[in-house]
Length: 111
Image (cartoon, rainbow, N blue to C red; front, side, top):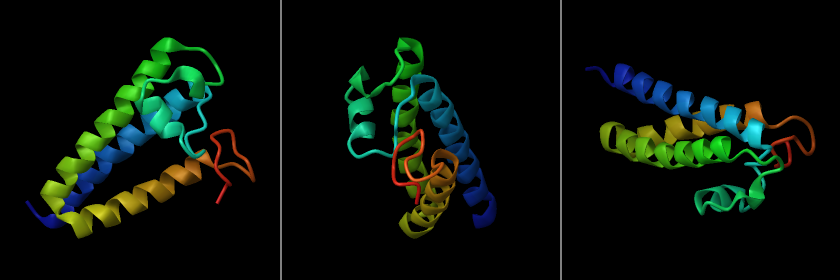
């Protein structure tokens, strides 16, 4: 399998996960881009939610955990340099999706 095909596969896997993360974060009104919020979600702390939805919060947490697993597999498959480049590209896309103005609905500074 060529390196391009492998990179595309892992990109699609990570992008699909991030799309679902954005959806669940929106349902729960979780500001993922704010400092400490991802840690709170990973530590199963629903106080990070602006809207109480236990099912969506659980799915969000599970998706974040799965993203770390997939990221590790991408590193093993692609190598650290290629995987880092792919993750940087996907992270930039995620910030584009999440940020909306100086203080978007997902937190962060909009940059």
